[in-house]
Length: 305
Image 1 (tube, one colour):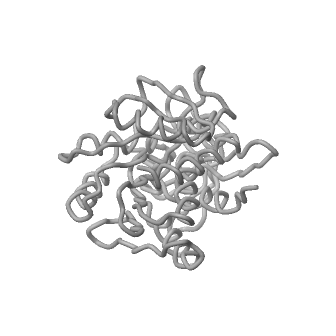
Image 2 (tube, helix red, strand yellow):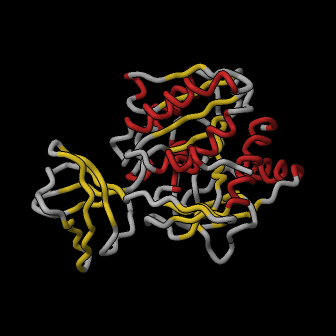
């Protein structure tokens, strides 16, 4: 049975788009503490040229796993106003947390016909980021919390890392608010490492065609359309593996795959992720069976691709 204590820790890290440094530091500490137990100890690549992103290089990589570290949230504007980071669901009563120079903050979100405000005994310093307060819940079949998108994608990458022999794990920034880091990550991946294919370890939606409990979703398209021959190869490997999976076809939504496809290199990519309900809210929920199949399928794909 999977231990979700690491996922709970990840969901509690303050890392809204543009301020992912706490997540990077958490991941560096985690890798340093646990890599001795992994099958292969990775080369850890980071520094000024990568801003707050992080790359783990295992053996001789052929394929990269992309997992974005950032979350949605809110930025304090003027007076008691809030500006969204990415596309968070906003309802009066949601609890938000953060910290400014005056101390820690736990306040209430107020939504009024599209205008967003906070309720707190004092003024919060402008520019302060607020995120959903984490209330991590686990039942026999489900895990539920804010920021399953994409702390579950990060969790998946770290679990796959335990047995990975050849591959890259790329932890990116800004995905929820328009992207921007993948361009230079892709350049490094292509020019320095010669890796031209990627799996997007992110979380998708429960819809009328993708449901809880039927396995990880292989996305044949969203707003972007990956190269069909690469997607077909992934589907064929999944079918041969016997691991439960679902096929997703959507006309909206996006991921780090969109930036890879826009890069001036012949990248192949495919979004492979567990489906969640209550998207971009404090109550995102994912079925444990779908998490298990996600980890299993990624391990097989990284071996076979």
